[in-house]
Image 1 (tube, rainbow, N blue to C red):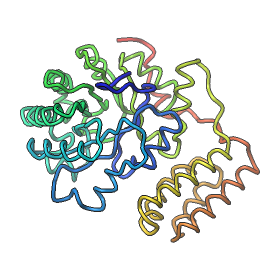
Image 2: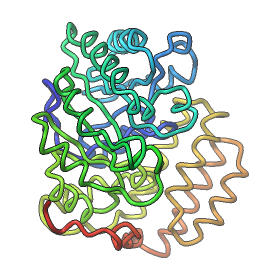
Image 3: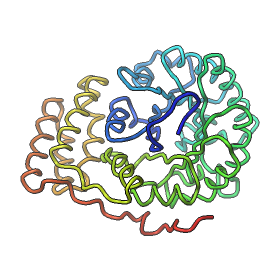
Length: 348
């Protein structure tokens, strides 16, 4: 698997998720076997580039390459300027966001709203490719299947993007209208893959080794991109990679390993955000780690009352030490509703 000049160690990608895939989370997922990670969305508005929020999102200190930055916006020239700005600050791959379903993004005609206006979408794609070309920086595109079920245009937009010079396309198998509800469909991903020569990545509802295998088989995609299933379970990449290579399941991670990983993640998180913001933004990550564990809900409620980094670290360590007294490894992953309801054993 390769994006432009950059070979990747595998075809398991971390999805860009606003408020989640910051540098500490990306590095954590890579440590657990992800082959590629894209930054959370960075605005193309120059008046916000110097903001603390944007500077944190664009932080790649110590991160292994290739450094991939996702940009979002509605004006071609502004997106081209954002491309050059981020390349000057270390971006090695630029990803265009045409997949975000959030209202605050789509109301400004950015994200997946751009799929409603193909001429504008292609104007932006061409401007970004042109801005990146002199630097030898590949451009990729992330999108949905369309705006709504009656307006699925991922195939036509993907073809046009390839012609414009985009070097990889990721398709989330939902329309913008769906948000994250219902089930992702992969027929559209398969159609895009069949039509394009560049790599195509399947995204949406990939939450287990079996699901990753079945989606790759069904769509013929070159890679899978995993988002929500990695929240609190970054070792999912290691589990999927082992299963794809051997057909066998890894044992769940040791509680001691989870303790070490979470505490290191928190320290890195505080280092990026500072104590006040870091403690509060870390609560969601801690909640994801413990949500399915014994006493996890009660612990999460207690965690939300703590106001200091030291208090959080002490509480997390004590909770996981107590869990280690009960079990050596985390409980085995249970089949999800998505696995139970989706059959992708046959090829299209």
